[in-house]
Image (cartoon, rainbow, N blue to C red; front, side, top):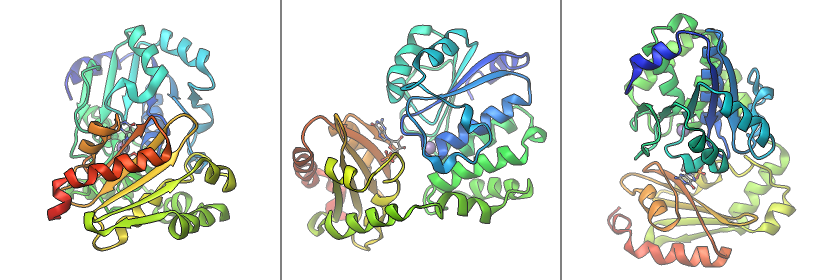
Amino acid sequence: MINLDNLKILLSTPKDIVITSHRNPDGDAVGSSLALYHFLKTRNHSITVAFPSEFPPIFEWMKDSDLILIHDIHTEEVNAKIDQADLVFALDYNSLDRIDRMGDYIAKAEKPIAMIDHHLYPDDFADFVFSDTTASSTCEMIYDFIQMMDSDKDLNIDIAEYIYTGILTDTGSFKYATSPKLFRIVSALMEKGIDNDKLQGAIFNSLKIKNLKLLGHCLNNRMEFLPEFKTGLITLTKKDYENFDIQRGDTEGIVNYLLMVSDIHLAAFITEQPTIVKISLRSKGDIAVNEICSKYFKGGGHKNASGGAYYGSLSNTVRKFKEILPSVSKLQTA
Ligand code: 5GP
Ligand code: MN
């Protein structure tokens, strides 16, 4: 970590701290934020966790998740906490524009920022930088950070469970981005006493009936394959959002079904949002979807999992996506 010694000095006395993570927080965003929150709590800091938008209810079992502030809703309160802060943590995102207006406010406030993140190509916006693009998740890096702080004794079972949550969700239960080091960390978390069955149940067996109906609809009515480009896509309209009562988090993971087809190497999930069309891409092997997202959809992410947006109609977005496919050379050889 760049500037670790200075960060240690800063954190050696009680401080006002704001922990932030990205829009549409996932298990890694919520898990890393609350793991770091509970770790810093052991040192008597005064800490606020703030996200740009709400997090899925499946993470409400985490202690103090009810204290998390949402910038879209509690704008003034979050801004006041930023004004008061001695330090802002930026977790699981690599650029302030990933947190929208909250990012503008943080940039203007000119507070020291500590970034902990595993996305490619981090922007230069932080004073303390811990970037590891080989890490499975930001949660894996929170584990590393606690070790760097020589504080394994403070890594209690709650913290271990939240770290494990982000590892589980970002690796798709150990399907992607694993490493020998990750399994060593998981082993250490198990030794702290985490309950794998309980956590798998809380995170993955927590669907509502409407989620399965939505999945059925996606697979039955909204799925298309372009075998010549080894590509599959699923689209959802605004009307689908109404008909299936789709809330934040409800579409998580649907895109991955496309990659279960053996000859499909690129998967797209394209959804009509109130003001934009959101695109989520996933790939197998050498196809770098972060490049597609940054070049054509004002987005980015990881090599095999990225997202972005298109400012136009759903049908134009799909047309644009299909136009791009012939230029993705790896698709021809994959
Ligand atoms: P998802 O498709 O699940 O929304 O996101 C997949 C990955 O791409 C995540 O790691 C996320 O951080 C990244 N990502 C999603 N949307 C955007 C975006 O609009 N901009 C950037 N830079 N990254 C994104
Ligand atoms: Mn992550």
